[in-house]
Length: 321
Image (cartoon, rainbow, N blue to C red; front, side):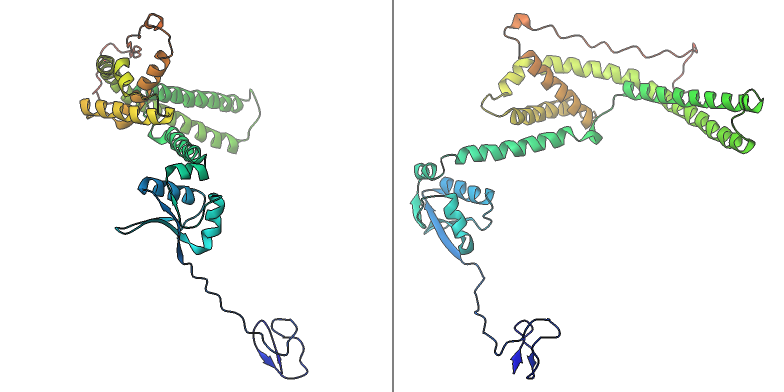
C-alpha cells in the first residue's frame, strides 16, 4: 500500500502520486514527533531589590521580550521569562548566568548604557506627545477679531466675484462681447446670484461677530493684566527645573498656568486659556534668554485694535437686521 505524506490518505498499489496533493506517495508514514510548544516560566535572574527588578523588566519589554515579569512575594524576588525567550534575554544581558543574583552595580556592568536607552525612549515618547499636542489644530481658539476679519474678507470676495460675473453676462447680453449662448448666460447668472447671496450672508455673520469683538478685547486686556500681575517671570522661574527636559518643563508649567487661569476665570473658553498659557510660557523663554535684567525690554501694554466703526451714527447691536 502507498500513503500520501501530506494528507495521510492510503492508496492501492500502482498509484504513485496523490491526486489531491499532487505529491509522490511513500510506502509508509513516519510518525511525527510531538513537541510541547507551550512556554514555561523560568527564573532569569534574582535582582537585589525591586528597583533593579523593574529596570530589568522594563529593559526586556523595551526590547521585545513580552514575557518578562517581576515575581515579588514573601519568599522570593525574581525576574521570570518564558523559556522560549531565554536566549534573547541572554543576548540582551551578555555575560549573565541564568538565575544569577544581580545588584545595581552588576546591572550597569551587564548593560552599561541601560539608563541612556531608557532616556532615549522617554524622549521619543515626550516628543511624540509634544508634536501631537501642537498638531491638534481643531482645539485652537480663534479670536473674535480674527474671525470678524476673515468673514468680512470672504463676504466682500464673494460679492466682488458676483459683480464681475454679472458684468460679464451683461456685456455678453448687450452684444459688446460674444462669448456665451443664452443657456450658458442663464446658468452663469444663477451662479453669480448665489455668490451675491453667500457674500451678503457672510457679511451678516461678520456683523454679528463684530458685536463681541470689543467685549473680548476688554476682557482680554483684563486677563493679560492679571497674568502680568500674578504670573510674572519670577513665578515661572520657581517652577522651571533645569534638570528636566524642555518638553517636561513645557507640559508641567503649561498645565500650571492653565489651571491658575481657569481657577481665576472659570467661564473662559479652555482653548483660549491654553493659547494664553502657551504665549506666556514662550514669552518667558524669550525673556529668560537675556543675560541681565537691564537687557530685558519692557512688556508692551495691551492695546486692542480699534473696531471698524459702522457708517450709521446710531449703531444698535441688538437691532434686528
